[in-house]
Length: 173
Image 1 (cartoon, rainbow, N blue to C red):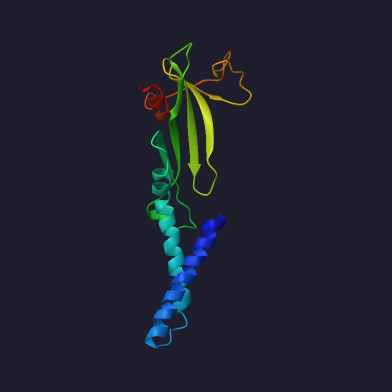
Image 2: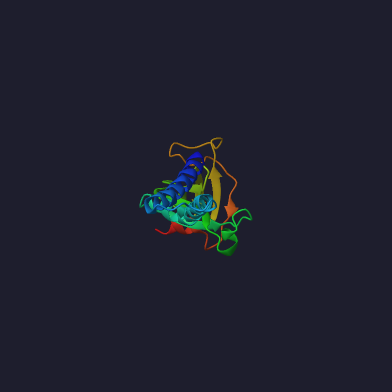
């Protein structure tokens, strides 16, 4: 967040500086309103660009084995441009490289789900997906695990829809 605020201010000063330099080189005096207006427009332009390009920039930096499964948008009144076309500001991805089948029950897979939201640190969870019963449960630090790293006994499993992205990613092979 600090980097975003700092960059926004730098963009404002840069835009104002370019206009001031242009007027200085032409030998004319800039109208009093033009420098702050240019700085404000530059800062708003940067904020809008950052909102709409965030998902593309972050998803392009993800490794090839990470599959984006869900994108979410949000519109906020203090950013009026989001009321017209809400940008993607958070998404869920599954790390297919960490898709581990249970040696004792191949229908059960352990997957790592990553949650990313603009302005927040990334969060990862480990889930157990049962491809046969189409259910999923979270593996927490309190879960008792066997030697293979799979839960011993029962964990709370919730049903998944047939088109659930986690089910599709875990059970596609």
